[in-house]
Image (tube, rainbow, N blue to C red; front, side, top):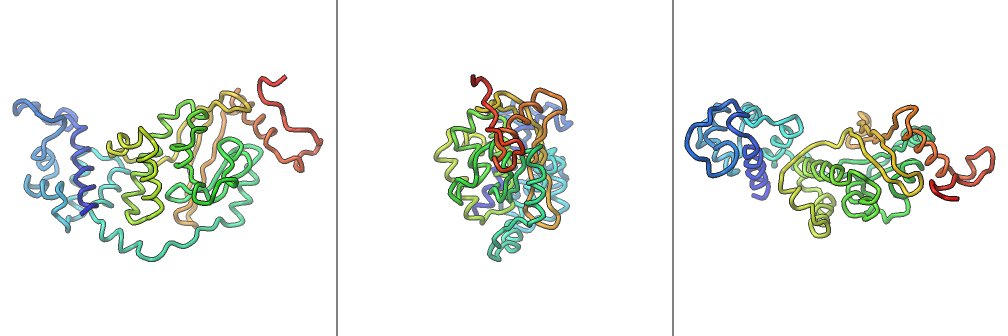
Length: 298
């Protein structure tokens, strides 16, 4: 029943954001008491009866076909992430059946650790799983964000860092934007993994401790945090901008690597190089010098 309620909330939120004009419908039909499309309009666009769509939105149609879900997704103008989320919510029993086996401990292959080490002098990079647990990170990523290795095991999570660590609000100049997409990613994964106890624990902690979380969560926005631009105010090297890309490992389902890069020749590239020099272990420096001074140090 909980998952059915999620389906109804999601469908209502998606039709509420669409105007008749957005959907190619006339604006006739009298004064609208609520924003967005009416149920009968979505049903018409999807080619199903109003009663059928109403039961779907109420979670009272357990055997909905893929063709109907595709039609509803088109009617509501869902993007790929939203369409996948719709399928996950509409078929919770199927999703749960796939995930009844205990989750295996995820380990990062030695070759991936080697890749992180090779990137260390150039790009911050870390490996995470579906709930954004940080499984491995190079030294430059720890210098940029936080020292994951120093945290308790259950707190080594990128989403938890962004949403709940006060230092993250200081680090990200566009913190609201970064945090909102992190919440959207958690919402997407919650639909895919409704029985993930640690994921639900993280969401519950954010509800209690983060004032903005509930309003973002209730918007039902879903999106993968796969690429974007992030602006930093770092305590060591000051203000700079990095682009991030998240790449999947076909050989390691559920694991992705997030890599940050700076525009070549830019001030941000210089700041990143300075951060790499500052964070490099003494044993790796050929000249035996001390870490580079912080910007502004005399």
